[in-house]
Length: 184
View 1 (spheres, helix red, strand yellow):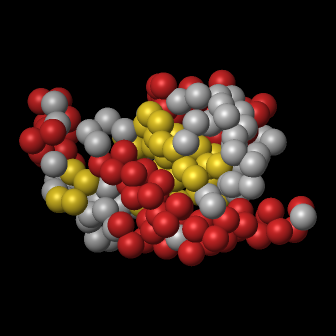
View 2 (spheres, helix red, strand yellow; view 1 turned 90 degrees about the vertical axis):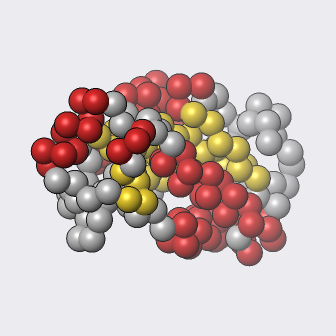
């Protein structure tokens, strides 16, 4: 999908992600695929395009935007925060959802939401925010990150839940189709 050249009759969704070690990008890939594969998405001819936040286009000519970020030390990645603030005016005129990836283990560690999500959501009028469990793989971490993880005794493993991501994507697609029907 080219976000610069809209196709009439389709719903276009831009998915923007900031990931450090690839786990959040994996969630965004599942989300992007599930938006188009969902029943509502297929009926509406929904298309979705995934971009890394540092290289994502402006949110012009799209019907919705989903922005996600990995969470480190209670904050979104800088490139995701920068994308939201740089495009806040355009994002306020389109449906926007946010998602975070970071908690690991059961119960989730850490249990709280990222500090900056609420203000970013308010800035753009986000319709919602969803937190998805992440992945912690020691082999992907720097020496400093390994030391911090060891000191915190954080649980290791892949806690991502693709089915939860697909279910959320289906709800987003249904909401967008409902919005379009209401405008018609």
